Length: 282
Ligand SMILES: *[C@@H]1O[C@H](CO)[C@@H](O)[C@H](O)[C@H]1NC(C)=O
Ligand SMILES: *[C@@H]1O[C@H](CO)[C@@H](O)[C@H](O)[C@H]1NC(C)=O
Ligand SMILES: *[C@@H]1O[C@H](CO)[C@@H](O)[C@H](O)[C@H]1NC(C)=O
Ligand SMILES: *[C@@H]1O[C@H](CO)[C@@H](O)[C@H](O)[C@H]1NC(C)=O
Ligand SMILES: *[C@@H]1O[C@H](CO)[C@@H](O)[C@H](O)[C@H]1NC(C)=O
Ligand SMILES: *[C@@H]1O[C@H](CO)[C@@H](O)[C@H](O)[C@H]1NC(C)=O
Image 1 (cartoon, rainbow, N blue to C red):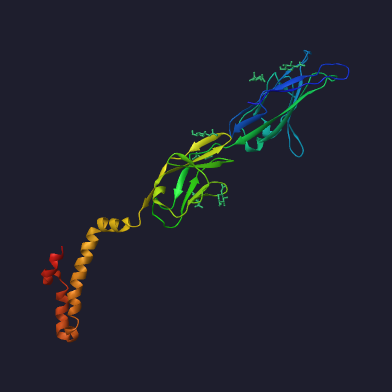
Image 2 (cartoon, helix red, strand yellow):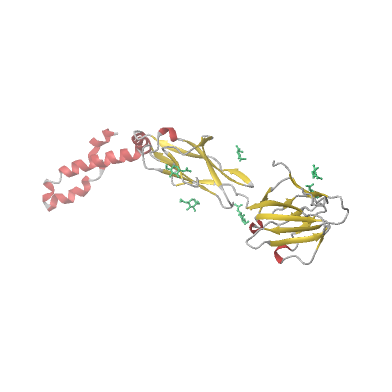
């Protein structure tokens, strides 16, 4: 928390001015939510103050002007039904819009002959972040293969920053773990067995901090490729062996098969029944 900002001054004639206190000069608002731009003032006068709030732009926009809590004149269309001024000068903004983001100047004056109290508050307006998820081309890779790119995706959220975790521990930009400049993408180059782990990303903005569900990256050893093939594809292998075994004898028969008569028998030879000898290869 920032220390209170007190803006006080005395006129040359010793007349006490409005003493304004602003407990917090930076307010973080959420799109659609509300923001309390809180101030209070001290004055020896019991008169109602004139309160003026302005939004700093190239040409400042008057947000509201009031005498005490009574708003003077009509509000600009964009502020209608969204504004409340409290006795202490505080401004409450409802249903925040991204365009409300900015610095607000406040002036409180009691009578024409005293100095006005002045101050300013910065308001940020951000959209809350929806839960991120990691987008990955493939969840299992072969070690030393090409790069794996992890993409930290999310639907909503403004002014987001990203962080990555491997097995729950924060990841930094390292030789093989390269983060894109905005850190939204994590690229693992030349995947190693040690990269077989869970990964998650955290998305943060001024109004939130959301972490994705962890995602698993499975890394296979190069040598294990053959094990996978031989266990997963055992039936494929047996079939291949059988086909090869069947094929070889029929190849041998190619030579005598020159005569059209024996070619007729060739078709029958393709049936494994004729090659009972090959069954032993099981
Ligand atoms: C101004 O207000 C602050 C806090 O309310 C107070 O501590 C301080 O004494 C006041 N100064 C004057 C000159 O009244
Ligand atoms: C001013 O009044 C409002 C409404 O009562 C309150 O919420 C706010 O905290 C007050 N501000 C200060 C600085 O005391
Ligand atoms: C994103 O924001 C839109 C509009 O506010 C909302 O309709 C949608 O549900 C949000 N998406 C998520 C995932 O929260
Ligand atoms: C990241 O993921 C999002 C959502 O799945 C997708 O739309 C986007 O194209 C991806 N970006 C890259 C560079 O892969
Ligand atoms: C990480 O390092 C790479 C290459 O050294 C660089 O291009 C990239 O901007 C760095 N990312 C961050 C977030 O510092
Ligand atoms: C965001 O949330 C994580 C986990 O809940 C926490 O460790 C981290 O400190 C938070 N970051 C900020 C800036 O609040």
